[in-house]
Image (tube, helix red, strand yellow):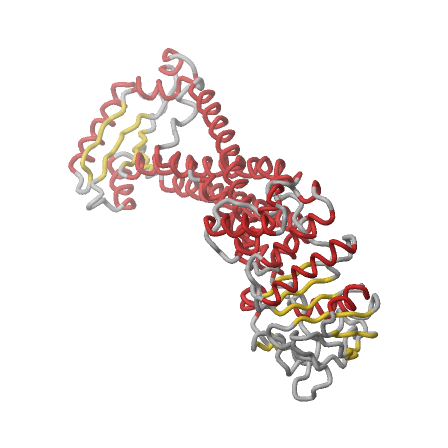
Length: 295
Length: 235
C-alpha cells in the first residue's frame, strides 16, 4: 500500500547488517545439500539407464585353459544368447577393453594378459519383452557350467538404497537449515518489535492496522532474505564450480562423470527467492501474532 | 478499569459527552486522568462496565474494527510521542498514511496544517532539533490532520510556557467550533478558570462532577443514570 516507505527505523538496527550474512550461510549450506542431492539423483539415473537394459555374462576360465578354448566357449555362448527370445544382442567384450577397465588398479596390459581374467559378454535385453532371469541363468549354466549371469540387480538395489538414504539426509539437512532460517527471522523480528515498541504503539493508536505494521517488517525481511540468499547462492555456486574443476582433473575411470544440468542450476538459482519468501512470511506471521496481544 | 490484576484505577465513572462539546479533565496526579483517556483513545478496554464510542460498544467490538474507530480520534500524548527518526512532515502525515490516503493529498493537507501551526519553516526538521513548543505543535498537528471527531489531549500545555499554553487552547477552541469534541486533561487551574469549560474531575479513580459550564460548550453529566459511562454514548 505504501510501497517500501518505512515508519519504523528498522534499517538502523544492528541486526540488519548481521541477518543477511547468517541467512547467506544457511542458504550456502542448503545450496550445497541440494546440489549434492541433485547430483546423486543424476548419478543414480545414469547408472540405472546405463545398466537397466543390459546384463553381463561372465565366462570363468578353467585351470590352465588355453585362450583359444576360452574364446570358443565365449563364441558359443554369444551364439546361444543371440538366438534367445527377449535378447536383442550379445557382444563379447574384447580382452583389451577389460584390460582398459582394470588398468587404473592393475597397471599395464602386459600384466593383465598374464592373469586368468574372466571373459565378459555384454547382453542387450529387449525391454518390451525381457527374458526371465532365472530361466536365462539355467540355460547358460546348462550350456556352459563356467558361465555366470550378472543382472546387476543386487548392486543396483544397494546403490539405490544408498543414494536414497543420502538424499534423505540431504533433505533433512535442508529442512533443518530452513527451520534455522525461520528461527533467525523470528528472533530478528521480535528484537525489532521490542526495540521499536513505542513507535509500534503510536502507529497502533493512530489507527494502523496490523497489516500496516507487519508490512514494514516483512519488507525488511524480504530484502534481507533476498540479500542473504544471493550471498549464499554466490558462495555455493563458487564452491560447486571449484569442486567441478577439481573433479575434472581426477582420472575419469575412478570417478563417475556427473555434472549439474541446466535445470539443476535453475533450481539452485531459485534459492534466494525461496529464502526471501520464507523470511517475508515468517516476519509477517511473527508480527501479526505479537500484535494480537495488543488491544 | 484495572491494569492486569492490580487494583481498580477507575470506578463509578459515568458520563456522556455530547458531540461538539469541550471539556477539561482535571484531577491530581494518579487520580486516573490518563487511564480514562487511554480508555477513550482505545489503548485499553474496560475490565468491567460499558464504554460506548461512536455508537460502538468498545468492550465487545472485534479487534480488527478498532483501527477504524481510532482514526476518528486525535490524540495529543503527554510526552508528544513523536517519531524522532521522521521529519515533522512525516510525523504529521502518519495518520493519513496509515489510513491509506494518497500521497498527493497528504502533501497538500500536511503542508497547509504545518503552515497554520507556524511550522512551515520546519517541515523537514526532526523532532529532536525542535523546541518543546514546536514539538508540541507537531504533536497537535498530527492529532488534527485527519480532522478527528474526538480530540483527546493529555496535559498538552505541560511542557510549554503559559503564553503558548493559552495559544494552544485557543487552537483547540477553534477546532471545537468546527465541530470536534474536545477533552483536555490538565493540571493547570489557570487555563481551566480562563476558558470556563465544563469539567470532569477525577479523585482516586472516581468521577466528581464540577459543573463550571461555559457558554455554548455542551454538557457533561456524570451522575445522569440514563447515560452511564459504559451505557452512555461519548460521541
